[in-house]
Length: 303
Image 1 (cartoon, rainbow, N blue to C red):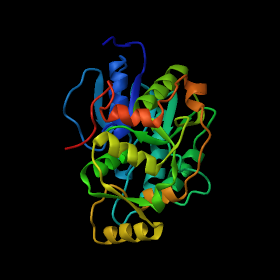
Image 2 (cartoon, one colour):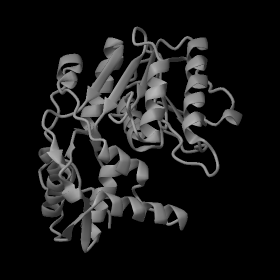
Image 3 (cartoon, helix red, strand yellow):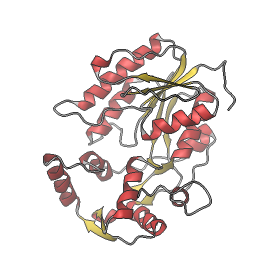
Image 4 (cartoon, helix red, strand yellow):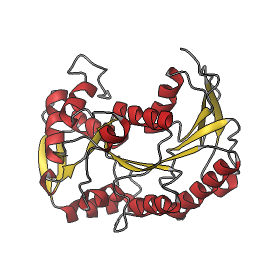
């Protein structure tokens, strides 16, 4: 690994998360010095990676951004009992942004969501959009990835469900069109954005969407399992998730995910190639690669 000693460090929040951990490894392998921020203190050592603690909650204090030229903000608080996590995320990001400016960070990159827009019905989408509106598109970069295909996140949970269940419920038959992006392509876009000092707001999605049903059918084929595909009305799924919340039954998806599926907006494609020179992997090919049915990568099916 050839280090880049003259390049300022890359700071990444949510460094233990699905996207954040991938970016930490990617930039480390590319020779950058990486400052990895996470809620839990990390003691293990990695060449080129400095571990520092940071939490979006107000009592955590200011992050140490000494020597950092780029800050990639992937962290967010999912849920805390009896607290407005939306506002905690907004205020915590504002505090992080101010700290970055004070520390002389040149590029602030915020990971938002396709569900973030001015008519969002999910609290997650509204929270992400409020943060978007607080940033300056002339100096900052907002990335809005589709459903990220990789070994974690919502897609990883879906693969696990299809591979280990006798039946898979599909909301309203799974006819919703999903826009996706391979995790490797996300990394390539971020790397290009850092090299170019990109600013503005861009969607990261593959050129062709596919329905939820087709995604599940592809996973079923690749996993060599044959769970039943059950069409379930939206109201029934919503009621079931609500009951699970009341009974404190942990699930891989929640009502926020359901709301995002209900308000399914198709975004313009092409930003990956136009802005970052990346031709996204089509979703079917991405799923096949991830599940080990092609010559690339390893299977993501969890035993």
